[in-house]
Length: 532
Image 1 (cartoon, one colour):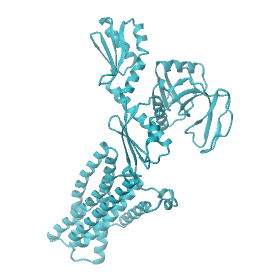
Image 2: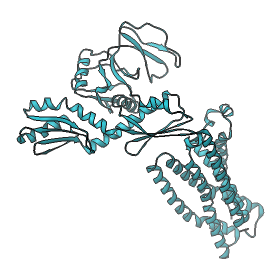
Image 3: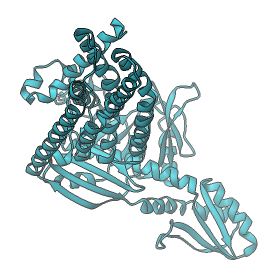
Image 4: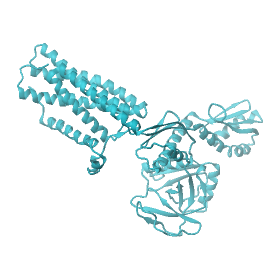
């Protein structure tokens, strides 16, 4: 007896209804879309090759940053070596070789090798120091190098994102590629020259004192600052990320410490267990920051990035060693964001455009047209094949295939996924794979009928015995899609998403929707033989 619980029937019908509802915005014009409720405006974003725009590939000069870091040690190493009365010559940073930059010098006496090792390791625990005869070589350890490189890439991406957002570009795609490259895709931007200028600009960060002689000025979001004259030697700057209002603080124009002196900034926790941001300066910055803190206890200072105040903490104590901490009412996310902004402003790595290409809107329109034709042809051929092979049951599979596409676009819309040419290929592949489960079920039903089982019972047995095979075959494909998503980038990930989503939806349509259609048909027709 074919029985499907009522709750399951309503669940299947509900999923199909909401699938049509969330896929519908993709068929509406932009003007019509604006009249829809905000929760029903999600559509599938078109990738660069479909919408047209610019593609830039940037190379981050990690070697230059490592050289700069070691160069900062040149200020500390001589002082510490002299304190221990270690004679040396030729203290330089070697960055000409193909490998990682290194700090090298020659000892006057080989007997000082152990003392030299201790001195350098005391300066920075992340150094790997070796001594060969009288030559001492210090390089960044692999662990520290990996951590710094990862951090620098994140900083560079943040700088690029800030620059691109400043240009008003909508929906830019900015992501890491490989060990030292960043891919920037700008849909709708045909001339990337201005964007390249913005990307090439270095984020400028400074530490300045807040002028406490005047109160902050509060303005309305999106409106210009209400006019108020700043005291002589000060200026009003906007304080960003201040919820509910826009504030302008008067800060002194004199730069106390420049952002180039900041070595690192990391999210951490204060002694009270609250999220905070730790700061680390180089030797020059540490001295300046110590003087600044000593002379301004309980006074507010401003951290300014690109002429906007990203934080305005208060000096609670003297910071003598160049390791400070910004604490306040941060959430963990806010602390992470602030530390990333600080690092982005403090350690901008040189960026080089190594690849640039432009996709015209006409070429994108051709790609969309060809993708539509390919998808429609695949759908028609698969539908004809299923109908010719399985008759009425094939027609039921074709109905499920229609809902498979509807649910797929609904899922992509809810995920705000970006559709690319590989993504279209994934959809076309999904169409072919969507009927695999139906083929396995129908063939299993045929076998049961040949074994002498009655038609109604054969349907139930066919579904039950085919489930294991269907799940196994689709699980292996899902594993492949997961690997592509994890290790792929850009369009490869788009292909993996459409493929994985299509497989999951095909399982639903084959095991639930098609089953429901067949059960309702069998009850209505009271069949004595199956048209297979």
